[in-house]
Length: 433
Image (cartoon, rainbow, N blue to C red):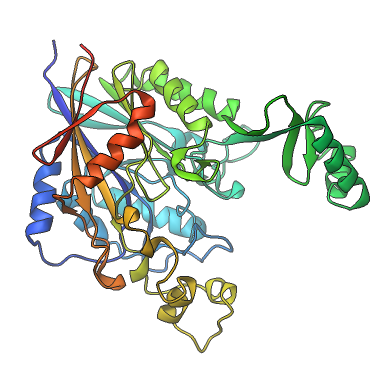
């Protein structure tokens, strides 16, 4: 038998501020994280000093942070970082390359982006006492051109993120499909698609699928919308896991996924459980999700944990110091306005958006123990990020005594058959023997 190893993981770290002091809240969170051998974060910002041009599209706001924030992440204790998400190319390839350079300079094991698909999708390894741990990071939420491209003998690859695409299909009755077809015939919504198919630049979706613009529809006895992992990406990531498990004692998969089931943001889209279970079937020991900026349920599958979203760990969107002209123009502002004006316009003076939803500013830090690949313990420690503070000071984590955070997570996890017991302000997942 090998010795037990402890893991900790956190949700999104959208960190834009330095922390020159180390207060009690920091020390308590850092001490908790340091109980683990493996400490994983998702870095949801680019890290550089204007070393890339702002993209024409962003992950929402354009995220750029000074390289010194990586020292804060290091001081918290993180030693593995995933950085495949919807902000990775906010500052194009220059921002991506600079972020990778600074992650290397600060000594992090990191995964999820690179100069081509092989690098972006590759497992990265952490050497622990008594164990070697692999991290694979991917994202399903990104602009299509952000996906890294594969290297070929006749073409270099393209920098970008490790993509986990999905296929969305809307299921409707024959009568409703006939209505859609009639609308398409009386408008130009499908004209360009027809031309692309005719000229060979787009594949025909087949007889069962009707394209209405870019949306896929098919006749079904049960109406609704489904998503499924794109087989090419799923098979590629599964093969990477199968490789990594032969070269490491443990394999962790990090997945950034904003996509939701219907209008229930706290429930993952259909493709995510399929993806997560396929990862574990391939040999992954845990799947760590993040993206929607709130908690989602926990599932124990084959005695291995799936965290469908760990919400936020550090969340400081309101402390960005600059935004490109595109951001201002989107809200009807011009060069006479500043970044504070733009953020206030975006949030309608902080009456809408993520800043007004308390659940965005609450999360948990899980710590779990494994030995010989088996899950032995799983603790859940609640944190809060300063919901009641002024917007520019929100976003640092501190341990919380509010058990309603755990009670909410308990309810979200029950549909997966997960039982969370709450004692002394800590959640513990009941594991089957």
